[in-house]
Structures are given as C-alpha cells and as structure tokens.
Amino acid sequence: MKIGDIKGILFDKDGTLLKYEETWGPINRKAAFAAASQNENLANKLLVSTGYDLATKTVQAGTILGAGNSEEIAQAWMMSGARLSEPDLIELLDGIFTEAMQSAVPADNVGGVVRAFHGQEYKLGVASSDSEQSIKVFLDSLGLTPFFGYTAGYNSGYGHKPEPGMFEGFCRKLKLEPSQVAMVGDNPQDMEMARHANAGLCIAVLSGNGKIDDLKPLSDFILDDISKLPELFGIFI
Image (cartoon, rainbow, N blue to C red; front, side, top):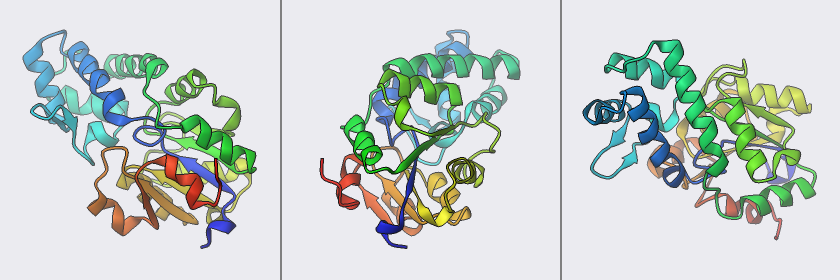
C-alpha cells in the first residue's frame, strides 16, 4: 500500500495524541488511591498488579494499565483487594479518567498536525481503550473536536483492542475501505487491531509506552511521535 492511497487516519489517544507518562502517571496513582480508600500500601499493590513500576514510576508496555480499559483495570484491582464493587469501581475510574482529560498533556504540535491533515481532506478518527466521553473531553479541551468525524472508546459498542471493531466502525461511518486507512498508535494492540482489519498502513509512534522491538514486526513505519507524521505524508507545516 502506498501513502498516496491513504484517505483516512485513525489515531489512538494515549501515548499518541497525548503524552502518556506526563498525563497518566498522576491519574493512575489518583485512581489507585481512590480504589484503595486512600490506603497507600493497598494502592501500591493495585498499581503493581496492573503494570506500574514503583521504582521508575512508569507503566510497563503491554500491561493492563498500559493498554487496558476501565473494566479490565477494575477486574484486576478487585482481584488484588480493591474495596468497591465492580460497577462502582468502573464508574469511579471512568469519572477520574474523564475529568483528567481536561488537563491532559498533548503531544507536541498535535493541533498543527490534526489541522494539517484535515486541511488536506483526510478523514480523521480516534479509537481508544479509554471511554468515549474521555476522548471527547480531551478533544474539546484542545479545540480539535470539529476535525474528527469519528470517536470510539471501549464503551462505544465496537469491542476492545486488539479486536478490529473500532477500526471497522471508522471505515463504515466515513465510507472508507480498510486499505484506505492508516492506523497511528503507540501500542502493539493498536497495530494488531489494524492488522486484523486489513488496514492500509500501520504507523507506530514511540511517544507512549510501546517498545520498538514489539512494534517493529507489526508496523510499516515507526516514528518518534506524531509531529513527524505530516512529513511522512509529504505535508509540510
């Protein structure tokens, strides 16, 4: 597939449109302490059980915190002793995650990149393991909502990554063939979703918690971050 054949771009959110550690480090800790009723030992246990490294204060690639959704995090934390029912914990997590998107740290020049592709008439969408409401709050906070014709979260009814449903939903809504769509994401789950859907291109970025050795076999291109994306497509901003 040639870059010139691409008509639509589907972006992941966390680690792609926003900086992962700067945004999610404080959020993950806040969520764990809330789930542990402010008990520090239990909060640390919950974090570690889902991929948080207490020594480096980072989330490990491919873990539940790194690539999972609120339902998966809630289930794992309940198994590790969280003190809420599963429905209440999911609601708590979604609330914390959504509120935090108002102050998320965007990727470098994300607004310029989005506007440049929109100006070239590419159809744009977001597919995230976060909730659909969180995606909308994030895009609204940056004034980018008008440029996206599609948003899908774990709770939008398309299934979860790496299943192909979110990608296929983008194609249906915006009337594109999968071969006309490029997926841009930071995790193997993003690339696997796109591969399962027969995407035209799989473009990985290293701005999240995905590792280059894991992304390389699944990707057509690997970029440092999305600020490099316009150049790849021959767009200069």
